[in-house]
Amino acid sequence: MQANGAGQGQDSELSCLNNSAQNGEPSSAGGAHTNVNGLSTTNNGNSVSNNVGIPAPAASNNAVSSDANSVKKKKRLSQSEEDVIRLIGQHLHDLGLNQTVDLLMQESGCRLEHSSATKFCNHVVEGEWDKVMKPFEMFLFFKSSNFRGTQNIYSRMKFLLLQQKYLEYLEDAKVLEALQVLRAELTPLKYNTERIHILSGYLMCSHAEDLRAKADWEGKGTASRTKLLDKLQTYLPPSVMLPPRRLQTLLRQAVELQRERCLYHNTKLDSGLDSVSLLLDHACSRKQFPCYTQQILTEHCNEVWFCKFSNDGTKLATGSKDTTVIVWHVNTSHQLKLMKTLEGHAYGVSYLAWSPDDTYLIACGPDDCSELWLWNVQAGELRTKMSQSHEDSLTSVAWNPDGKRFVTGGQRGQFYQCDLDGNLLDSWEGVRVQCLWCLGDTRTVLASDTHQRIRGYNFEDLTDRNIVQEDHPIMSFTVSKNGRLALLNVATQGVHLWDLHDRVLVRKYQGVTQGFYTIHSCFGGHNEDFIASGSEDHKVYIWHRRSELPIAELTGHTRTVNCVSWNPVVPGLLASASDDGTVRIWGPAPFLDVQDAEGLNGTELFDWSSYFN
Figure 1 (cartoon, rainbow, N blue to C red):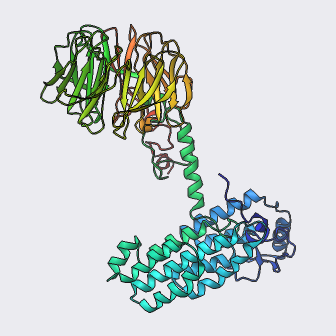
Figure 2 (tube, helix red, strand yellow):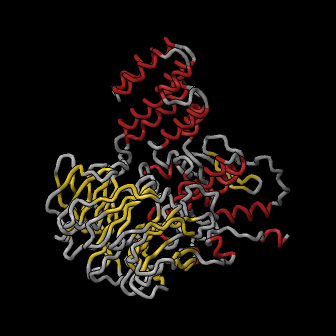
Figure 3 (cartoon, rainbow, N blue to C red):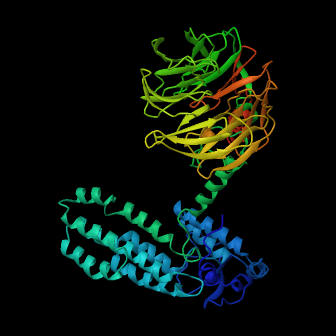
């Protein structure tokens, strides 16, 4: 978190007065060092308030001498200490505590910003465009060796200033003055001519509201001028003018970094500082994480092969060897109640896929199943039962994002695209499909096949390309919401994370036992920061996406865990399906103490200040 290093060569001149002033010696900046009311004051040619309305107590000569000696012994400020003082000063100034800022600058021997910068800011906020150019022209001294690209930056800043001046003239209906700015000041800059053409078009605006709408501009006044000043400050070195709200920016970055490094942080990231305390480091408790069994669903009477939460998080579908699909309702207290039982899948149900709007649910069977069932979930009715050939093997399915089509296939070489009535729209010959996924572009279908790879297929132009190549069979895979990452369960290897854009293996996760069973893993939690997978050792493993080692191992199942599904709306709700015939619902610990409930985020339920009053 380093500030922009431009202009550091003028730090001694621009950010703080000569440190000899702190040692009781005359300042090389050309001012005299005096002691007024016990405060060390440096007069640098600028008027500086010393008393700030505080009455000065009577002091003896000995006291004055003692104060002078203490100033002489004061430690020379380091660059970082000077930076901190300026950051604090800027924050206090933003809060309106200007007298406190004056005292801080006097005692430290620093100044908040260059005097020309102060005048510049005042003129911009007041809209004094003729006066603003004088201190602005002083910034030409940035042509020193420590400030690169000065002329280009100078042109950018001047363009922004003149643009504001031009728009304000137009809003005040001073068309001739605006035209003069456009022709005599903006155009000769020869900068951003495309923008100048756009600005010239604003001359045709019939009224101020039309101008503000077309220019996407707040209008003449403090709001637009403050926004302009924020832009201008980004072009200046911090030794001259600090970036706006710099202390708040640094604090926000520190909070965000702590959250990112927190292994169990599973709540929505709030970019503001009001929701946290800065007095403690951020740390979430494991007890807040979905590591504890909340429910055990036992309505299936055989192995449970698959489970999947709906896209809106209100339902869970589970498929079993017992030939049924059970749809569960997730109530407001995150308890699951049986909603529908969908029967008749003669081969059992090994894969499920919700339509984008959760209206329909498609169920597939194991390798020897040639049928596919498309259910209307709310009505509990079978809309389509599709089978192209009795020799087919339809074991996987994926919905197109438009919700009007789906693709399905299997290891016997079938790869179809169909409509909601099961009518065949397209087919791809000779692709032995293990798992499918449709990307958000509505054109590309990812398919893992028997050649230990994932390829992208485009049904519109009938092109395909290789994306992922593994050395072992890919038993299943899933893709993150943004389409960037793919999570693979690889036979005998475990769980692998791939970047689909760069086509590189990002990480191999450790701990899970993966043989040749089909196990389905998932992304989950807020921002999909976590990864969960079942395992042949009867456990559920959870990793933080950036860490290869598991952060939680969930026990309770007594046979292989075939599938896990993380609720996409409730980040503290996780489901797992197992060959032991049960579905476990995992959530936070049922009872949390005060510290755990608050997640160690620095806020306390008990107001200790009232205790000590």
